[in-house]
Length: 337
Ligand code: PEP
Ligand code: MN
Image (cartoon, rainbow, N blue to C red; front, side, top):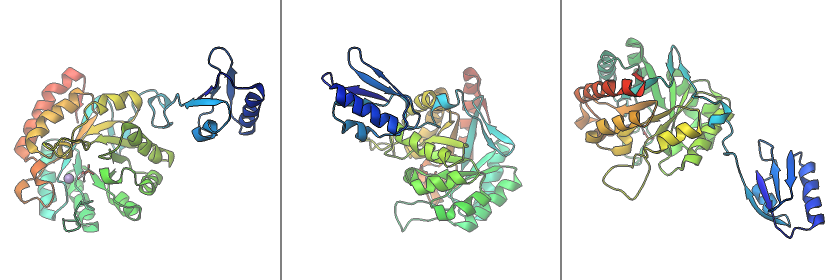
């Protein structure tokens, strides 16, 4: 942190400030030439920006390190690998998570798991607890849905990615899931972030639809800080003035997050666009932009899907997409997982 002092700060004002810094246990250095400044080296701010701004003789306060200590790239120095049982999510791979928006029945999730596993997919997604905008919309099969997706995944040696919508449900979701998803509407549900941070399963954290990148990384920081280092970020589109797509895929977030953080970043083209015709080009864009993987909604009968049918693709389109990504991946030094 840099505390910029007023040019006309008096010697007693400086002395008083120095005393307060010592009293708070801050490590600091005072530079007197040109613009007088105090540089504070302490990692966690021991005194707030507001504290300094209310001191006589202080002009401005600037943070020079990002507020997310554990999520920032420098804290590790390289891309983190996330271990999901015997599978690793790592930079040399482009990992695909696919499945329906929601678990609807045993037949549905079994059939989808069978087809996806035949295509070589190792991660099966499907919501059992659904955060729906309308209380009249399908809310998910809840614990029965968790049981069904676990059974289907086990049958085809797949991993389960499914959402927890409240702290109360974290233990049961973590019991059935291999990766616990936190949805866009809950990205700033700080109690929920702490709860998933306290359990051991990896967390797939989706970007809030109105969240800045700093807020997104601070949300990840909550999970890391609570003790869970296994966090996967997911860009799923943000709200803009544009109405032609459900959300606007912020593709620049992908390389930017790679620069700012060591955590893997996935892209969800399904919720970003809301349109199945855009899933292929956006998936290619995600791979080209350096994403670590995709989260894609696939349904065998999208017109009858209980949620998000218009953005769900069928198996034929999914296999076409996979073929296209397999052509592109080697150029980028990645292999499809
Ligand atoms: C989902 O993945 O089905 C979902 C609800 O996503 P989001 O939280 O990004 O809207
Ligand atoms: Mn969905």
